[in-house]
Length: 436
Ligand SMILES: [Zn+2]
Image (cartoon, rainbow, N blue to C red; front, side, top):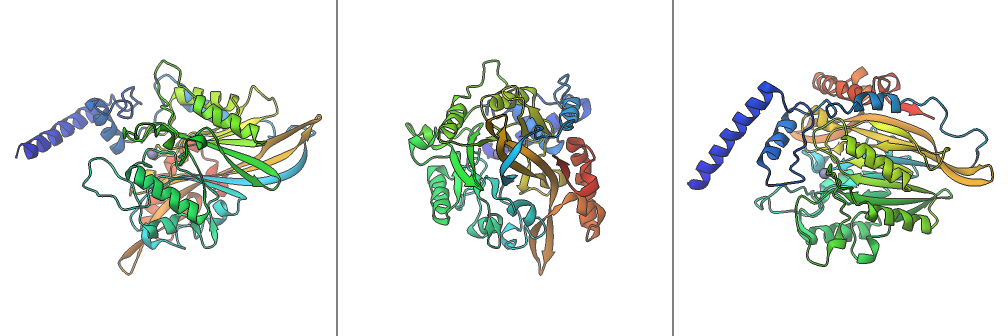
């Protein structure tokens, strides 16, 4: 009885709080309070609920990030320096979060039907696997993200083409406890998938993952901001690569990531990609501290950065490195949810990024550089046949032009302004943005 009264009181307090926040509008900008930092902070929790209902379309007040990205998404010179002699070429694709979703179990062979070339034509394809592949008791306290084997089968690839690399460093990987994570490792090992970010043995934590493709050696490194305040068993901190990226004044300790990057270099990697599960949910711009950290990680040796977690798409930038005047590094702050449990149009909008990387030489030095970059906004659409729903991903530009039906047209119309906000309007011309 007392529990019921407390629950109904809590609902009322939340309703009143949201009403005040909506009326006065003080949470329309990102807030310093975050429940990822302090789960006991009730105001931070209320702010999270507010954001989940009113995603933030503004960057931090006074940060100037909106204009910053408009500028950084333009490039005035070709990626490759004059006189660069290309020896080898490899293509990479990267997508955001793979999570549980309604209808996913019926989507095998359908999910990627119209986008499989964008993802799986690449020599190396990457996704963030944000689901445990075991059933978890829903009555347990907390949020649980897990998928059934059918759901996993649907999102792991298309026909005989599958992802090359999964990141498993994310806040939901311990939802089923260490047992859940071990079962994911077992499954990925059995099926021959590569993964990075979680570790069965301590020595793997300070290492990255190496993938050789077309004469180019890629190194992948990964970390997550946290695991939803779950506690790893004593002496088993190595299981998940955790770096609490925060906005605290103390410097974020990036040593774990740096050690992974250095290990990749020591193994002869030509191009290192950092996967970061970070940022703030339901926000369309990264925070200023993330931009500073991203630059730091690139200057410390990563050549590209792939971010995810916010359930929204966020801007990318083409960063001119200080460490090498020939090097431009792509930074994706958040690619969004490729497969989403949500029905909100903006949470079913994500980005497929494609990079063409070339190894060659210039002025007597061997370098591996970014040669081309493509970004395609895609929309997850739920269809229904025989009373069963299934999911399919489409290039948003195609849906805007020729939606197959009225409800799809409406979803595309709802999502498109968010793509404009984050990418500008160039994606509308050819369904994607191309830089070279
Ligand atoms: Zn996440």
